[in-house]
Image (tube, rainbow, N blue to C red; front, side):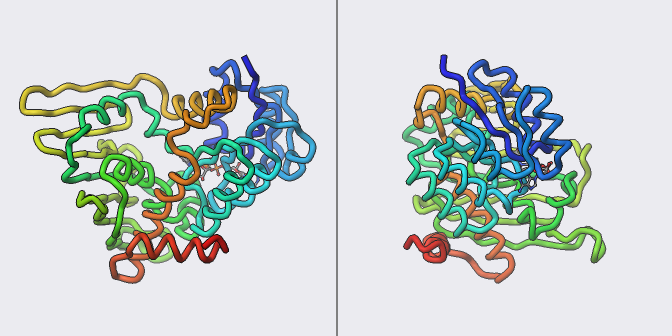
Length: 336
Ligand SMILES: NC(=O)c1ccc[n+]([C@@H]2O[C@H](COP(=O)([O-])OP(=O)(O)OC[C@H]3O[C@@H](n4cnc5c(N)ncnc54)[C@H](O)[C@@H]3O)[C@@H](O)[C@H]2O)c1
């Protein structure tokens, strides 16, 4: 069994979530850790008997790594992905892929040129019950997708600022938008309206109400709405509804509910969030199997693009056509 030697960049909340799950995967070995806060890198390094760094370039120069996890604030992802790809490392990057779509194009291109495996961590896509949803939808045109996420101000300080976190669509609801795309089809046009009314000026530099309409190229339509105005203990779970003739599929974090005129049944998921995506990535690296990755860089790029287009639509007050939005970023990336 091949060992996958991993460098963990960003030893904060998500870095520790993934490290905890990697402990259960025998092929995974964290051999280096990196965080600009030395105590965070050292704490994780001590647990894994790894070497700690405060600069990812120093880590890449000194270590012989198979894979790099990028779990730093979103604005820093692109540079770390580019440098890791140039060193020939497989890359697991947290969603959202980047903050700027041109950076996503450049990073995805670097991964492609290096011929390494890339994975954007859309963990909802790896939950086994999705296979049943896909089976039930075979041959059935999707009429409507509806997604929602009610939440509070994010617990992490930098994420609260829309310029750093991107706002709720980009940072959090991106998981649901990714599922809407996966089941509904490629999005052709996005229209969004956001509000900023729940908090007094200066308290929260972000939108707190989000209403987004999606139109897919195949004719499916979608509605995505969310809020940062509530509180952590709110009794409501995020969900994605996929609706076809006589079929309602409701995806929640730990269950898939299936309703037809003949039956209602629920498939449960017991594994912790993020477990399946970590297993898929480590197996893909250990076995040289990019086909195990459901969310490679190009997929992560498009899901990011829809949420950035929603922000653009909300700011400009007009619909955004995805083809133009993507082409503009590709040109800025120098790849058109
Ligand atoms: N998949 C999910 O469900 C999920 C959930 C939450 C956050 N995220 C994403 O994960 C990423 C990290 O978020 P988080 O909540 O763990 O943030 P965090 O602030 O808890 O952790 C980020 C860590 O990166 C370190 N860091 C910052 N710049 C760095 C750099 N240049 N090099 C090395 N280390 C650096 C920070 O010191 C910090 O320890 C973000 O992109 C976020 O959007 C994903």
